[in-house]
Length: 294
Length: 322
Image 1 (cartoon, helix red, strand yellow):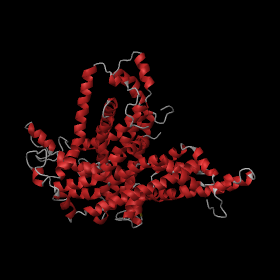
Image 2: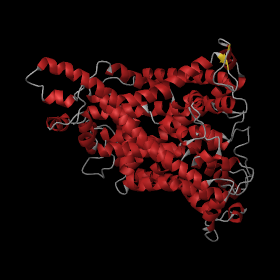
Image 3: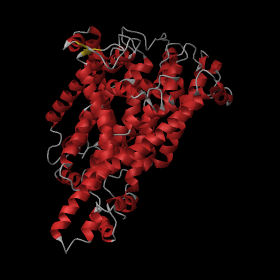
């Protein structure tokens, strides 16, 4: 599963290292790789360039590779703009990201553990009822979910943004599969010492599964931070906008300050770039674990 | 473990009752297990009932009613909403928009993410660097990417990057997002999604490539298979079957639910409007027509489920040995 190994003696697929046309193929592949790197990094360059430019620099008819001078005051201008509640939106996104992730992992991990380890006559039926929800494409349910949430009076509230997203059948499914493979001996040792299900779960299973939790947490947090459709549906009042909704209303506004908008983009991706920088190992594990349903 | 007096915890029953009273242990064990099962699974199931099952049932009910601006309608209209939606030119054309989108995005994503995975996998130096670069766009939201695409790369005026490059060759500005013929808007729509998701699928393919046993390649080498295309065609590709099917299915389901980039790049316009943008417009726009919206959402859900099942059938997903 681990993708990160750096050629520790594992033979490479022969077909791609010793190709028929040898050198030429090698050079072509490096050129392809180089072009791909440039194309993939180009949008990041544009974010930085535009975020630190003046509007005149951006809209100048001749393309400037770098701003004539770095306009750091764009940050201040962004947060001072009274039309878009930037600070509030960042706060909302942070709350949604953290509480949404913690809540989803807590609920799904306990459900997954119960399904994997606690004998109960109807456990199978419950498991199927959970898996059945995976068949229903998530985005299609936004209209029915909106109906329920608006009946609860949760429109334009953090509750409405967070609570309906906590119950992920997929996460519960992943946790169940994971806990089925958890070494039973560890749990039994704790049992002998007198721990119940609760104690075994919190004192043995969770502490020994932290990489798995970290992997799912990283993915879930990014998903929450970046999600758009549900916050757009729920955030009907600007006080409950997340950062994504705030930026989106920015685009459709009549007058657009490109430099300010790109500063908003830069600020909004900062937390995720940090996660990528420090937790990439877990992220990649999370992708491989959740991408392919074994 | 401090267990309540009447319902001893499972641990007590397992450890103390083990030898002396097998029969009673079992009875107690079952009661305790049931309680603990619900302690662990109950909150989740309750939430799932309220936020997954209830909405779907409610929506099913609403789809048979006339429901303007209300979630508790009284006028039963039978299959009227479904018939309306299935004969609604705009809804059908949104399905058409999706189909064109899928025809572009699914094969392109599949091929390009596989190529990236092969390129990264064969690199001997700085492999982690290349993988990170291609994976990094996953950090960006569709809103962020749409914004870059709309205002900086595919801006219709001269300072847009694409038009700047065209200008070097003396070509006139193109209004990328609003030109209907030729339909230039597909270029930003498709490339934005490729940029965002290729890295994700590349990671899946890399994981798949690394699960292929090196002995297979050695055997192919011994048998005289030509390195390059032959080995790829007869060893690598068949071994990636499970991954390939997963990539295709995930990708198609995701494409059906395209909303963010269409909404942010083009908005709710009739020439390029996928199903979700249209449904959003009718059910949460100025008139909240939840009856037609629910019917449309259910039709879409059924289509997605049928396509997923067919696709799994065709590719034999879940077969033993995959």
